[in-house]
Length: 239
Image (cartoon, rainbow, N blue to C red; front, side, top):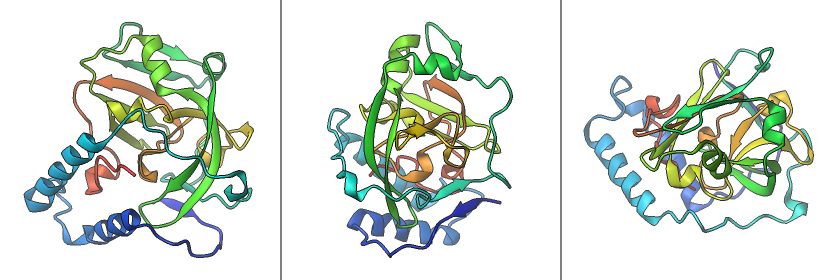
């Protein structure tokens, strides 16, 4: 069972994009849950994914909200699919593999020694709400360079210890300048309820693509779906 903990707050104004995505999510029960990628809706999603990919610019940065818009401490919604907040296994490591020259196992200290980047970004949830936080960590593009990711790896898969939650991304989105493997939030170490020790965060995708509690990053020739994507949610899920 999934756990979504959202403190009380004022209802936000929804953008056109959020309304369309929310409407699509509401339509999911009418789909064939056993074959979420089949039929007319599956074909339309594939067309939509190609269109979104064609329009995507990996060099265009999302504007950073001003500091006064940052969501107050404790008010940023928490989400995981495990029965309780997942806690990192003893001797946690991040495994990086797939089509790479130098597969590695990285400790948190290894990641913290890599070039650090930070961004204040607005989070967009498929359910219609948004929140703002500042994240810091390692850009996926810097990790890809460090391990020698092959040009044939057109997709990047992210896996976790949150009851097996995962998602796969198109490579341009994963290597966007504002896509981070974040180990910090709002100037502090990433707390367990938000994905410690390491989570994915980006300005260019909807919230369910942001895999928390990371265990693996794999550079692959084909996409592998995702926890929600395999249940009918949009795969590209761009903002």
